[in-house]
Length: 443
Image (cartoon, rainbow, N blue to C red; front, side, top):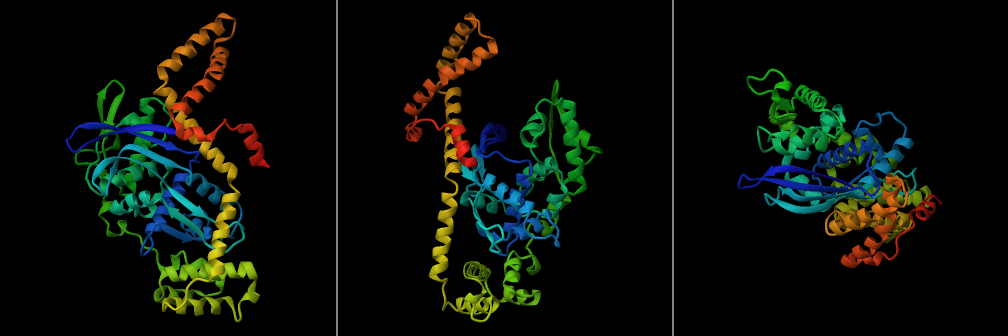
């Protein structure tokens, strides 16, 4: 769990503080945010973007620049991609004063990022399905160009500059100049630099990020300023604020929407797997709706994987084309066996992750319990803990050992109090033995 906060100005020009909490039951890798924003950019690059995005992993990794056009399919990159999607699917974002671009006001919100449905067989040619959290998708869509950025520009930046880029996009589609950011809050809370770094070092890191964004045209220096170092304003000893000016990047029409060409469509890979050449694929993409092509491509590839090529009277390509023509005319629907197959695949996926579900639930309860100890039960808990530590030290325990022993003795009692005060966690029953749980997971 990660907690942070930031300041904003309400409609009455009063400074307020928004509190943010991000729950990550399986943790996050430093590169996960690149996959998240990259997939979102690919989603909004479709002609008619929806919250349901389907593509092969090869297409996604190729568009993200992780593998080259001629790279072989499968292997370690696919597995790492799958693990990243799994981590992102469990993230919950909470914000006490999130700016809702649909309603035009700050609101208390909570939402996830995405869900997924992936073929279990790593050799499958079928597409991976990404289902964006509806609220997250609507927020992203409502911000206009905020998430329709050029993926190539994003990819060429370093991680800290990417984070500054994403932050400023939300502002620069509405304003020429950003608010004044506190140096330490921006560097540590947003860009991810270490809180132990000195102010001068944090300042230098932000200068480097600023220089990279200026080179990309995302930022510009205001009149009379010749160096990014002059953007900082001193407010006290070791206290600085900084604001940024919008660059020419946001004046380009192509910056607002990067629609994929037919050659870059996520449908190309599954259609090639069926047996079509580039010319035939381009014709179909211009003739039929992408929904019809997506559905029948998955049906055709599922039939081949389930029954083999003998399932088709002529060929997989002929089977696909005949069904697409009839489906486009409204005279054919998806077969029952395919609908049943999707239900079975979903059930198998859920059955293979029972321990994950327990860990997820356990992590959420622990986060809620820590919040309870720091808020409702804080005074009583600290009084009892301090008293017990004093007695253990008087009996000869080392101070550090006394603290650990005291917590081990006190916390179980407060866990019961917590569950009594919050019945929604009482259904979990006795605590899960995590050591035993990890053995089961490993097995």
